[in-house]
Image 1: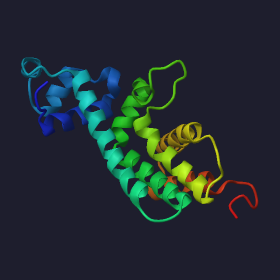
Image 2: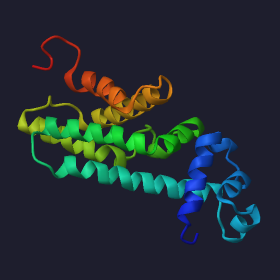
Image 3: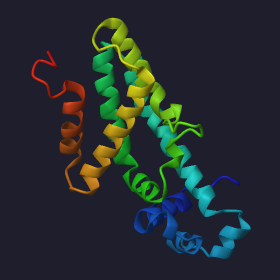
Image 4: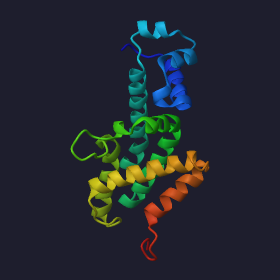
Length: 191
């Protein structure tokens, strides 16, 4: 597929957000972009291709948001907190796309294996920080791969649910999600 016009990608994002993936037809996307469906067909544009490009851009953005936590100063625990805050920010930035994808399937987030683990592009930053935190003594020594999978899903999808299902403000949703994750609920667990 040729380089996609940013206006067309934005039209696809708005259409997916408004109608969900299943009901976001190429005709609706074309209408939103002010083009005809035939024009999109001639350009080789497909709904799946538009979705793939939006997912690629969102994934690249996620990687960029993780970079400061991965390369910054501080303990593993401090940088993990920074990474989880960045995860909430990335979810906020791409909320409409994530909600549309979740309604269709969350398969893009999973590796194609016997056990449905989250794709490493999403969990590697968290896994690295968990290992570094265990090494510097700021975090418990846990199964880093499994815990990274849990953290990505627990924080990301809980944040999205609180924002969309409960209408909470971004700061409130992030704080309410991250506090029990980072500090636990048992007395003395965060000491």
